[in-house]
Image (cartoon, rainbow, N blue to C red; front, side, top):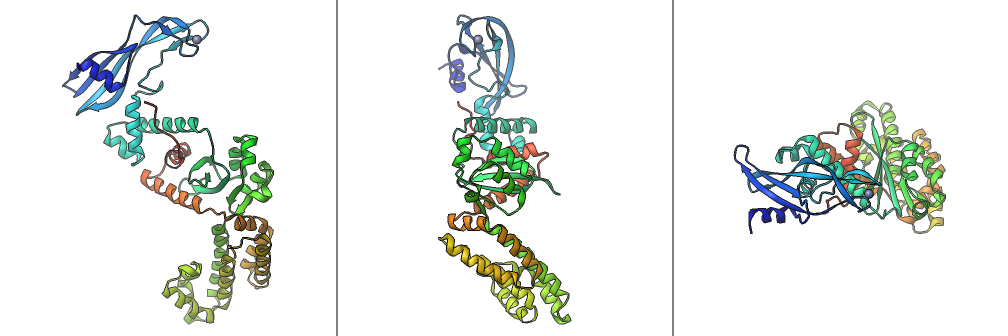
Length: 407
Ligand SMILES: [Zn+2]
């Protein structure tokens, strides 16, 4: 096989394209591959495939995978056809995306690296500019989104993630396959609205459950778009636990100001013992809780109420679950602990969604694992310059998308 045929094989090109010459420039350690379009072959319009005349040619260059230790550039004169209907258009190039200055094989190579390492690391490793690596990532996400024909949206979870230091948020919608389906700016009602707006009526009907915290914005958005919201919304166990923990912590803090001086420090230091769930208590925490329960009775009461609530998530039957939660509510509301009473009221108001979560066995555990993977992405990337890049990186790594170009 001669070197021209070898490079035709390497680039996977065939008639009407052919490799005209291959040159090694030792000054810059680069192999230059010159590709041409066979003049004897007629041109067709890329849109309607009708036979066209050649309007002109444009010279372009693409970076390809290295040939052994040599950087490899592909150069070609691309003919432009002149169609009576569609005007002047560039002929389709089989080895590269229209907007890219890299061959598809090179892009696929960069994508496989980007799946393992940050844009910074990949651009250094492959001697690419940061913007070029970022562009390849963006094109891969666009390609993946375009190919996504079926969305698994029967069981969804929606949660907020901090996009930057401070208080900038994005809304993440994920499914029970562990994939992020959508990323929207902010954590407002309009954020989730924007996701629902993109769904067809049929897709809206196919949503069976949507797990979330009890904050009003996501609830209102779901009520507006999902006609069967009363059965679909599930309030996440972990978020209920977080609300109760916040209340318990504020009971503990105010009680720490009232207990005898010799217990103040100990109660102050015991924060994390009370916040852990009973099954995760270490021996040292159990000792702390049983010792302090004698002197910090309000904190102990708040803790018992929180722990009891956490045990009420294993029912299969709606009526039994409702009965158990009503008993819990009557205890919590008579606890004479204002922060606990306030969470109890919110739970009573939203009990229907808690019961949905219990009987459907739905929670945000998958979404939480996605959140921690997003945090890792932020660490790896040392933060993101803007939300568009943050969104692209989330969909690239966690969208379950088919990212690779077709070669
Ligand atoms: Zn045409």
